[in-house]
Amino acid sequence: MPEQPRSEIVDRLFADLPQVHTELGNPEGGVWRTDRPCYEFIADHCEPRSRTLETGLGLSTMLFVLLGAEHTCVAPWTSEIDGLLLHCRERGIATDRLTLIQGFSDEVLPTLQPTELDLFFIDGGHGFPTPMLDWYYGAGRLRRGGMLVIDDIHLPAVQLLLDFLDVDPRWQCVGKTRKWAAYERRGEGTLREDHLGQGFLKRREQSERASD
Image 1 (cartoon, rainbow, N blue to C red):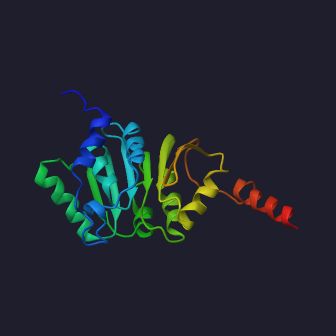
Image 2 (cartoon, helix red, strand yellow; image 1 turned 180 degrees about the horizontal axis):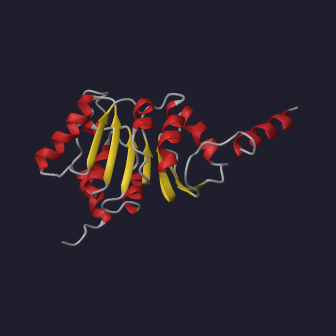
């Protein structure tokens, strides 16, 4: 059976929105989502059985299912998990490659097996320091050349993470709007490093010297 074009998968996604957040803010369309180009970017960088991870559950989760990715989603609320599974079940959409873990990402991510990832989508908690913790515990599993996608970059804590990534030579920005950004990983292994030599701190020091 020929593979369905990625553009058609995104069209299908938007034509049948999963009603997973009617009890969690009840956003327009019944599901929290970002701009369509973000989903198109994800679709362009995912193959069937790509290894993907996501913090937060939303329209993106359904996209990973439709793409046939080996996807793990960490989400805190039972209602959204049940809603997504019901949506798939009613339409006969297979979820055998989907792993849904209920819990908060700062507690769950450190417990996961450190399998290598092709793409990691950060769209969970947006309060400081959650986006940084998601990045630290999740993005370190990305392979060299893997993709890190971050939503809601206009929010302060998320913007702080981008300020760091934009001057970190281990990451290359490959897509960005006012709503989301994507980075390609240029290294591999742990993200742990000493503060010496970090571009983020060097830039701050230069700014402080300039203001003296």
